[in-house]
Image (spheres, rainbow over the protein chains, first blue to last red):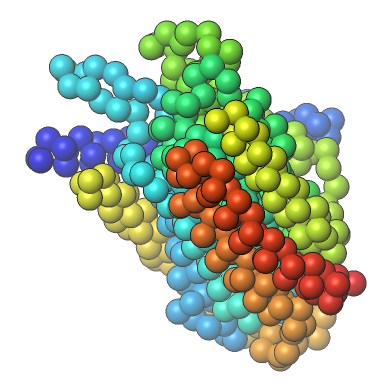
Length: 333
Length: 118
């Protein structure tokens, strides 16, 4: 039992540290890649190729004045960034990064834990993350902030529905809610091949869930002057950002596990033990790069277009996909 | 089985400590020179608005209601989807009946214009 506790604490510390590091450097990658897309350099002055930029940003955040607006609901205002970042950093607990390896004669699994309701846990935390954004906008007592948070709430719950329905067809094929088991059903055919429509729908809904362009309604800097986080300054502002990037990375890892076969190569090509973790990382990196690339490519949708897409297109398509999956699976069996 | 949740608890304590620590650190490290202009509501230079505690569009409330109904439906689908292959044709037809009833509701709200945003 003590062994187990020590192993868990060490794993949590390592994963948490790596996650924060990756969050910081995703912001650097995004700014560099967006810079290239827009034919400029992006941050390249602090350290070699701007590699120390995230560190400088973090330090600057700490030493900026921490303003609490006089009209704000103080307690909620201060707690909202915490409510936003805690669930965002906890999603990683159930995601498997690879198989297992031997260390000092112990078998170490490359995940924090594996629970049989992993997908429900992820959906629950994603839902909790909405509270931070909503309460933050509400507590600021600013009209732009309120509008931003209202829009976010409506958008996120709308796409959560389509996302949940899309997941159903994946679960029907895999027969499990555990990400480890779902990955292990994809040794030959990835779910992206078995469920192409679900993959496509999940990608769109996922982008809407993490408020990514073209669904970045909560911010909409042109209309709402930054939306829900308008009144936030210093590290509290940075925490909303970190939560957003933690969500982005979690989404890339979830898509990798659900649709891209986790640490397996496609078409049943055997994956050597040492290559499993690099294969997983490569897939996550490609997805993160894709999320940055599409941000540089797509303009923001209008709010009524977003709602129409979610309710009138994605939801019926997800239902139809469940139906088709059901017919095919039943017919094969 | 419950042992699998212990690491999640550890992660929660770490994440909560991290979150609260960041808020505390930033409150302690930063300078503090408040004045009435700085603490007023930010409005891009417009005359300052009395605040955001005013009525907003009922549309948002409607969306939340509709979401609640359909999300509960999705929750019912999860256990069914896990055991889908074991349930066979019977389970599939049963779920189609359930979905059909909800689709009637979906068609109703569509016709009523709940999904329209102008």
